Image (cartoon, rainbow, N blue to C red; front, side, top):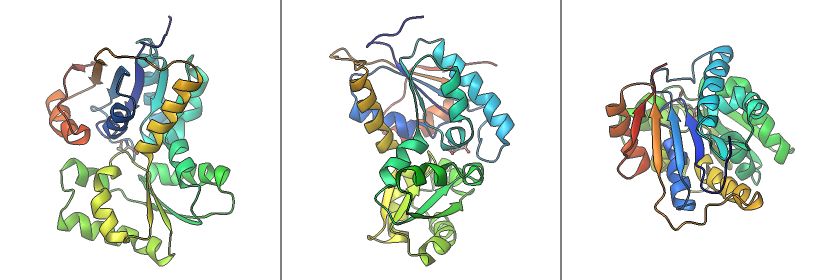
Length: 265
Ligand code: DGL
């Protein structure tokens, strides 16, 4: 197995949500080839046990390593929360994860709110990661189980989503947070609505953008950046229902989505 500057970056998620990270990578690093894996047959992960998620995560990381990726990006917060170390242990190439990227971006905050899936919140991974960079910050976490299905339904600016957000964010706003970490792949799509709910004074941390910056820095440091200018290739592997992946995925990606392959496990 050999990797070089032209090798793709491997990005993976439990389903469609990781495309928010792919989008940020396409914008920040337009010459990079990307191979994406979305486990659409087994999504959502955010309400599953640690053992199950760890097993699925290992399987996906191995699949991408066989594609000769030059780097692995764990785009799913839930997988990063419970299995990041496991992926790092088995990988022959550098591994980055969205939780670390989000924590770095949140480090300027004093009272930091974190919203994510129940499994991510229960793991305390964000609290630990943020405290590594900002030991004096106070962190208030809130699981938001309903946001993923609302985003997948396309209800990005819908009254039901607004009421749901107001309810979830009430305890965080009562703590007068100055920063809100969007700790789930789907939440960047809710940014305009969340901005209305929290007001202008709360900084919103989008881990997709933060991740693109970390990938760019690591590629430069390791001399692995693709110099271009050839048209990059984007491949998408999913475990089920490629049509739905394509339709909803285009919303996440903000552009048309081709080269979708079904993996039967
Ligand atoms: N990708 C997951 C995350 O970022 C959200 C979807 C799921 O629950 O699988 O936490």
